Length: 59
Picture (cartoon, rainbow, N blue to C red):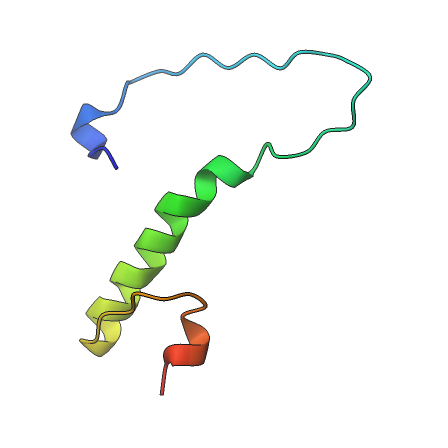
């Protein structure tokens, strides 16, 4: 995962119009989101969570 300082300032995105139903446009955001949730849980609880779903691990 890259750091914010390493990320490009602008990203150009193009969607190709076709007859196929849209799927999969949201999945690229999942890995960084899960990492952010794990880090937030660590800050809140002091315990590291390595396996998802995190909520089933919280006690």
